[in-house]
Length: 247
Image (cartoon, rainbow, N blue to C red):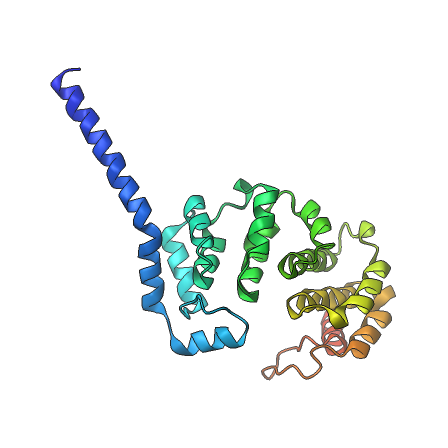
């Protein structure tokens, strides 16, 4: 090896070492940014909504802005997720590559969710884009884990809302399950079960009367506070409002 080749080799080694150092610090740098963006009022809001102590209280808009700067970084997303920090998991859901995950990897991510907001972003931006989501839906609909079950019912509600390819769902059986299970389900699961019940009432006229009756009987979210002009998640009111919009 001549002097030029040796210098080039040393340069490449030094470059790789520098990249390794930068990569190793990336999570820490992001944590520093998230911490600087933290807000006490937002942290209290998150805690009230069920978020754990491992959070900074960063506004969702600030997390989206940070994701825009990072773009897509699959490995970084996985590293961020593993910290168990709420904002880190939210950021991970925005920069991860859904199709780069195996079904087992996505299942593990889903079950290690820290709170409902993280679950919603993971379901919307990652699960919904995964090629094996239907197989996962069938698996999660039988799960006892609250986050897996929430994801399963979320996918089911999505299929009902789309109104296509729902012949295999057996809507009557779904209503049977909702009637039996929703009153005692964990709050995280109740939310997406309720979404499924509303979706059935809205998009399946033949089952609308029963869906509305179940919503009234169970009474979930009957007294849910909403801003003026917004539709509450209480099924009888929700279904009526959406059907009127359909016209």
